[in-house]
Length: 287
Image 1 (cartoon, one colour):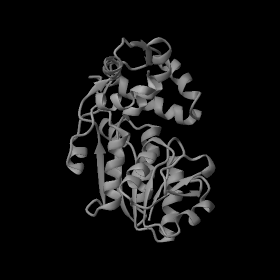
Image 2: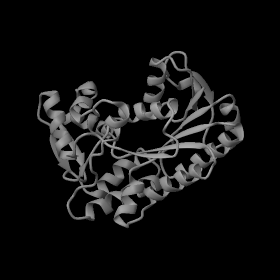
Image 3: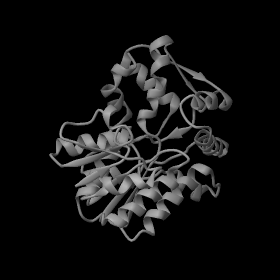
């Protein structure tokens, strides 16, 4: 049996959907089972990664875990799950981390975002369990933050219109996670994940406009404005860590934050999804 944390989120939800479509039994961990909208046949258990006492029941009978937790509590939350999993006899954990760990190491500029994920990785690596770590960069789904303003006035606000990244489709992250959960040969591996093309935010906005068949204007904003917008959705400590990493990226020469890597096609035997393909699938959110 596979346990999926972050089951109502972008990647965790996609992991559950893929397991369900493959006919694989899965259990979803969520703080609010009654409110969770999950694939048919999914077993749902109440639990909170911030409450270690809630985890042993959720892990009973579990062989493998997809481990995802966001924000500034990630290291604490992941360590709680890892400790409980070791006690419960879980064999394998596939952990969602971040390309920010390698980005900080390569640049020599540490930041809080990198530390949260690095400490979470260290907790898993030292657990004695079989582990696989996934390090995606920017999610294509981050573009959904522009959906409301694109619908309202045809604009998309960004503090970094020209910063080049290699956004990855969350569905591809989920497909890699399921591969690592179900198949042998992934133990002890750390996989960097990207999409197949380098795009700036302005490039992504142009693609959205083309898919929607109407103009979408880039609206540059300051980092302070971006911080205020993020603070409406996330805790201040999480916002500060994300902005610290972004400020470092913007200060480096070249304006390129990420390279394309061949991990997704190498593991899945098919091309990684393009941003245009993602945008076509999600066009209704912007219309």
